[in-house]
Amino acid sequence: MSAPGADGVLIIAATLFLALFLAVLPLPEWATAWRPAWVAMVLVYWCMTLPERVGVGTGWLIGLLLDALHGTPLGQSAAALAIAAYVTAKNYRRLRLFPVVQQALWVGLMISVNALLTWWVRGIRGLEADPGYYWLPVLTSMLLWPWVFLVLSEARRRYAAPAP
Image 1 (cartoon, rainbow, N blue to C red):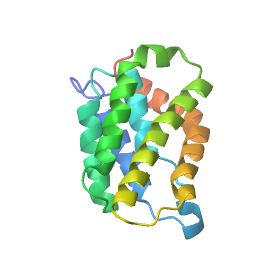
Image 2 (image 1 turned 60 degrees about the vertical axis):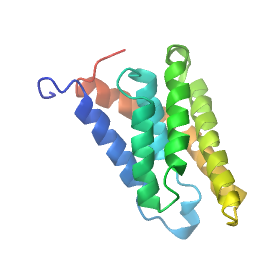
Image 3 (image 1 turned 120 degrees about the vertical axis):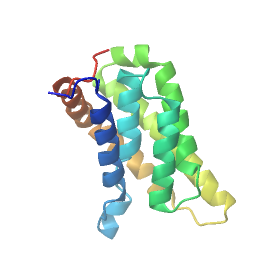
């Protein structure tokens, strides 16, 4: 179903841009703190399944876009996503063998790194930091990981991204 020669690039880009859209989609005030880390989850998935195509550079570029969309200091999300991409790509063989529940713990760890970096940068800038705002997305992302994994796996199969 994919275009000849596309080799899944379009589905990777489409899922990353969908994650960016979900990351900035307006939510009610009470739900904002619970927003899952969509971009990090999608990036971790692609780094785990196609580390030769999606890696640190992709994490950095998507992070810069996320910084621009959120209005955060340029490089804050980029650094966090690049770190998550690097660590995931280095461990992709092991991660593929994990059951989805253990992968959810890995996703939680990668999003925790993102939360720590964001919390640290806000502290350096002298901004007030509510701990719940940073740690609730870790929980919701871990809980949603099995479904995100299934949806992205099906999209990869359906639109001909190369299998690992």
